[in-house]
Image (tube, rainbow, N blue to C red; front, side, top):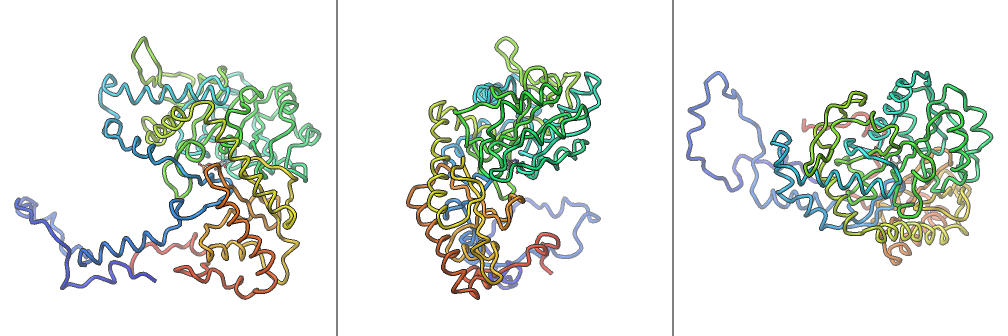
Length: 477
Ligand SMILES: *Cc1c(COP(=O)(O)O)cnc(C)c1O
């Protein structure tokens, strides 16, 4: 284990220091002065540099390893967009400076909203939300406010079991009651008949994750859309995984009323690691009055921020949302253009199907022969003794890979969910498939102890994940 800086510290060493020639000490009133020393570690500059460099080498990162984390779209994002997001002209904008002096910032937002409308077929977008789940929450508040405005009591949201887990959570948070819907077993798609059974006059909306969490495109969308709208309900599209369908189909054309996308996933910001995100929501025009404020508007040649929207659900995030994420998305969309975005999706789907084809004769695939941008394996029948999916995932760390998503979706026993993304080469995919096959088909039969002990080569071994999440120890001593 790497020592902490505090453990490396010793009074007789220090890093290079800069003398301050202003007598700050004298200006601080006695009663505000610290009584005890600050207790910062004392360490040489060289050791400090090595400490952080060595720690950084222990990271799993896209810049070092393949990261097949299903549902998360851990893809390579062009570094040029990082440069653009760091541009001082945008970075130094203060939210309270006069509006005339931040026209470029507002133009980026205005233009991206328009581009997202074109990409999705929705009528208007709000870029305020800070994540996918935050977008869902906003979209559901919009739906709630809409029904309130037309004086209809609709308290229920239908969520299929093949939806992303954030869907029911967001609906509950927005004050709705969840009606779970069991999907067709073979591919997680929604059954028209089962949907009919739960569709009452109290249903506000159906939330569909497309592609669903098994990586399958919802085949009955047009029929479902008619059924929902004939009932006076609305249709919500979880478009977090938009790199599966971009440039090929548009939720707006399929009849969806509200949707969100994740700029951090599809549009050039990495997902995961808890960094900033952005979950814009798109709506059809009849829902526009309810969108969060502020709205970016163009009056003559000038961009303005409009906070005065009487029917709006209000403010969900300070000022412009997570602007650097918006800026990266803007740069990405403009650089690729319509054709480029379509190619992204084609490549993402091709890569996933290539891998699926290499697995499917050997390992059980619960959801059919084809997939969109990701797929789910269910290796359970191959497991002897007490080997489980978690052992496979831990063993992959020994081979230098980040583990895929496991035990999700919940509807598949011992699930392994793999998303290669559009940015990986055939060589990378081949290598990974070989390692997974080796672990599941050979090691899980012959080297049981190794699998149970895995990871063996990592800085820390198998952690108690529940304890680590529930009782993290975040301070020294
Ligand atoms: C990632 C994801 C979400 C949630 O997005 P966050 O930004 O993590 O809140 C919702 N739905 C689907 C389908 C996703 O893949």
